[in-house]
Length: 542
Picture 1 (cartoon, rainbow, N blue to C red):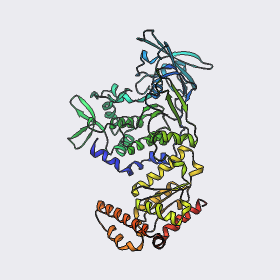
Picture 2 (spheres, helix red, strand yellow):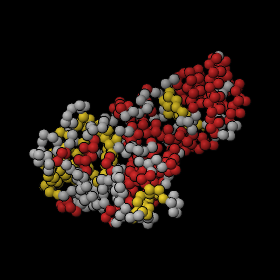
Picture 3 (cartoon, rainbow, N blue to C red):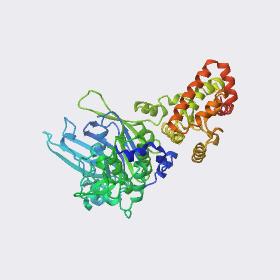
Picture 4 (cartoon, rainbow, N blue to C red):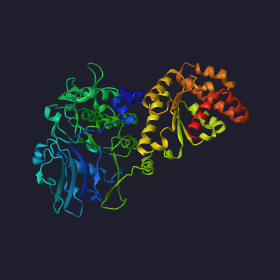
């Protein structure tokens, strides 16, 4: 993994600076485009699909989940078949039959010259007929468009070449062992199933005068920490980055996920009215980079359409929290051959969507069991509040989940993840207004609180607040006052962190030794925090 660039991924603050990500977090993605889209698909006798029980309908973003080899890739390949550049094999026709079909609903068709009288139709159905030979060595493919009142017309697949293309594939086999160093125009305009022409595409979009350059430059820098461009090579140009005016770093020496990110960022910067097919975007990506990439997908869904397969709860909760998105589970019977895939639409109910998150390994699987959430900056505050202040002084908050973010820089991201999960699971009525954020009273804490109040202006300001003390340790019993001062005065961050941990351990031991003594001490030293917890309980009606 590229050390210098990817080190920036640990600084998650940069991923919350882009306009796209802010819009994503606030749920303000617009879907007002008028460009060609796919509306539905029916598949028969194609790969693992014998016969779909019902059409799979598409939104601006459609997410497919399911186990490996369940049939997700078959759906993506079936869609891709409407455009040149996808290889349909005789073996793609389901075993035991010689005929298969793919039927795709289309709307808002715009300027497709090779589609004759359908070049500007409002809607149509594209039927792809597959006829394989008995020996499964050859296959015939025929495409036709039809719609009421227009009849049937034989057509050719869409071109896999800008600007006539429609499908932009980012599939699992997109990686390439060799990048073409030839940056001629034909390579720059080619829509390929691999990344072999990445240098040609970067050669043009890296030029400041090229449309889309600014967006590519900014998003690439935000996500990776640097811009990947086309660098001189022995036989032309190769994808890479400049270290100095003379030293370069080829993309081959970067992280496994960098080429996919770079190619996708370049296409997102240039595309409008296109259909992206993306297979498992989470592969080889740091979670922070993945979230930033998904935010760009959400932003781009206002002008493009996306069909994405995934095994990631992050992908599901991010992309399916927006209006109009669709979520499907693709399944096949384990151990049954040949495979027979089925597709089930995931109901937009809390129970169904929480079940999906559990299946995908979501760590907060008990999310629905809590009456509210209290997000705190430091683990010391979370432990003291959870283990002592709530049980002893405000037991009505026993069913409020406390959570430490281990640093002020993570407060905002954690709360926004919570808010996104609320939208995804459709639990607004149950959870909106049932979450609180508390930070230390230092300058950084005040900045975070002010920003959260600005972003969530429809929430009562009291949901986002600072303690009056700059460090939570000041609320420890007065018996530890001198040691608190000594600990907080340590200049070295690592040493201070360890000293704070040891101090908390000793405070907990002291509190556990004599409960009555401890209650009296905390009532004196932490009254402000106790009163704040009581006000939270009152707002919950407890």
